[in-house]
Image (cartoon, rainbow, N blue to C red; front, side, top):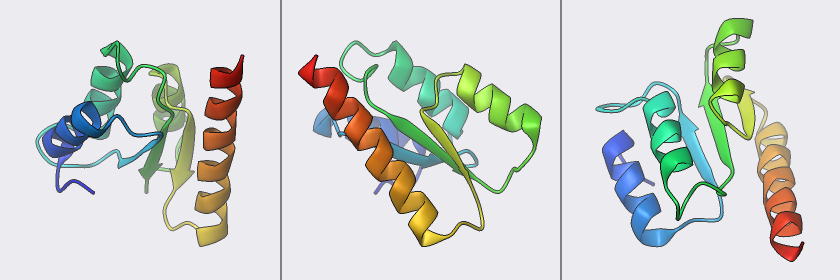
Length: 99
């Protein structure tokens, strides 16, 4: 994993991951800016992005989903919930590729 938003974006560009899991509150560029960069990238726009945050309010959740987040998980979270969100997004991405 990357230490900050810029590092995460650089890794995503190089690695072209199957999924991105990011906190909203990260250094240098926040999770929303990272999500925007991913959604604007021809190589990464299709990658599911799960936003992870302690912000459990409707406005932040709506902002994330409107910006193109694939899912939104609040902290503290149960391990099973996060793993289910990851599994679901990977399955959906796989289904889209198969079509």
